[in-house]
Image 1: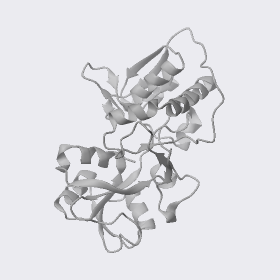
Image 2: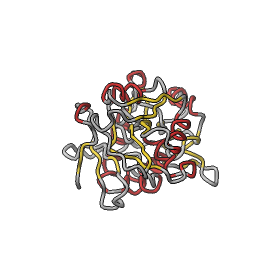
Image 3: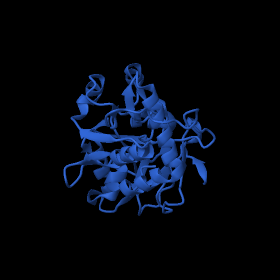
Length: 282
């Protein structure tokens, strides 16, 4: 399994992230690896409960979690949860609730685990336990495929126009690590993407997940592609997301963590990733 660093040399630190292409992946799809191959958790059994473990999610954030054709929750996170439950031989239920109510519902014991795109932050960790991240939001550059532009670097971007969402973390990162790029501010990502499609800017630098969905959708008119590597510095782009439990449910949290590691080792994570991310944000 080949590993490579996706960071610019100027930004590498202890939060650097490796990505890997599993044997099941096509050469064009990069699957992120958030687990240290030199560190394995001990075998942990899930706590035995008299009832099903209740997972709470949201159904309005594709491709991570959304309502399927039958109205039932699905998406990458939801199917990963189902695989975790199978791996731990747990009986589980998955209920969709409004996104902004999920953590309060967990605290009020209306569920046992939150499985949704809620960022891991110090504030969240002060109230709850969380597994190690199983997904993160990489920052990425996108460019038109017909211009032959070089892969981004501090030198290559000197004098090049880069569309960014004004006052965003991506704008701050571009200013810090690509100071000679000509930043072009836009009010939202859709406007920046439209400018890239028309050729009004050379690159767009933004959230890789949204860029990947745009590139793979009809709005891009097949104009563009992700170029260069991913950028994942915690100070700018956060820690990612994990499975969240109440602080007293230590055994459950550790079992979930171990199951996620095993699903990566066994290739199940890669299988689900390829199902929901035909254009990888990594």
